Length: 388
Image: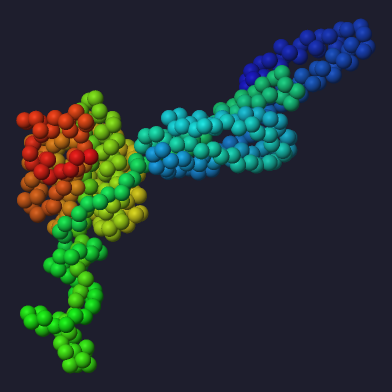
């Protein structure tokens, strides 16, 4: 019983024993009833007091994991009194997350503190809450039960799966971090080697010091490297996806967008993120101002918490969001279901303004089989994209 029920049950359970003790004519019966009365009172007091003496909390305020990978949930349970607490059960509610076992049998010595842990995993990306924690026990001799609900919660963010991407480097800006064989991106700050002079070589490339030592002309060679700011555009508008496969395709698109972000982070490129979906803070516009895996992890958390928006994507509005212009040399990678005519036209206009555009098309098996049907998809979208 909980504290309130125990308080109500105390007079009901003790009244018969008190009457028997006061009015029984047998001396032995009176003392036996007194002994039982003391035990009942102590048991009831134990059931009332113990729930207040057990404190439980989640050690971590939030944990993060990738879809289908296990994450550890840690709980701290402690006894704040000099009274030992006999065995009781502790159960943490995992909600939509899967856990093989989230219940424990616990006993606590005076002022003892224990750390409990279990593993859980999410089958879908998103933001989930673990908790509250339920406690249930009995008096040492049994018979009376107590229970308590502790309002402690753990936020679990499940990231989409990350896959290795293999995309051609293409063009960009010179003097970057991506090596290329195109000598138009040759970086004069990155000396590579010397070779014998060939007629037609720029005289500014001649290494006069090496040539003087050997009495032969030598030209200097440099590494070619390019750079480009990248923007991943995730179409998360519900009406653009077919109803039958909507949830599956949106999840596939989210995984593709997340994989692209980490692909560009591995190339050490500044990466931004645009989406038609929504999070708790509203719309998302992340301009490509920083690079590295820390920036990628922040974008990944946005993708994990992203919710689809009703309606169809308007790429013209999306690319103008925030009154910011896309910098020169930006590579725009769009993850979307098959494009409409208006969407394809918006991306074609961005390309005419000097933005490199690539479209990765995510489509259902039915759409893929009917891809050659007349009028099934604007030609501009298929020329720009790859099926996912």
